[in-house]
Image 1 (tube, rainbow, N blue to C red):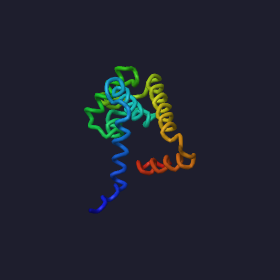
Image 2 (spheres, helix red, strand yellow):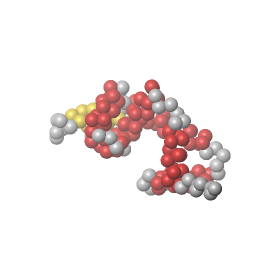
Image 3 (cartoon, rainbow, N blue to C red):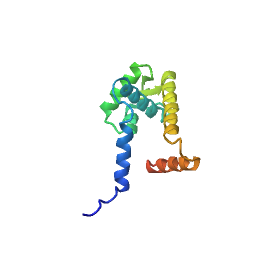
Image 4 (cartoon, helix red, strand yellow):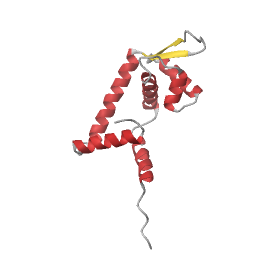
Length: 142
């Protein structure tokens, strides 16, 4: 009987994603908060210019109606503000409110703490290399 081949890098990547996506609850308030962070980050990515619902949809890989629901929910919670576009009253322009900016900043601090905890036993060069490689993998400069 032959030994099975070790998992390839693609399998390892997807095991990595599945493993970490299950580590924190994605239900109830946690799920809602995660959605709020995602939509506020998507709007923040356009700053200082306001974002459209289409911009949010493209940033998050959603259809227009899904992005519209996320934006409306975040507006309702005071994390975003929405106004009619001056050139086309059918279009909405969205910006992050101070409460939304605090949410994003808090989420980013939490993300950094989690990463630091997960890599606590790693050397600084290992952490920096892992960061660079993750950034490269997702197509960002890092």
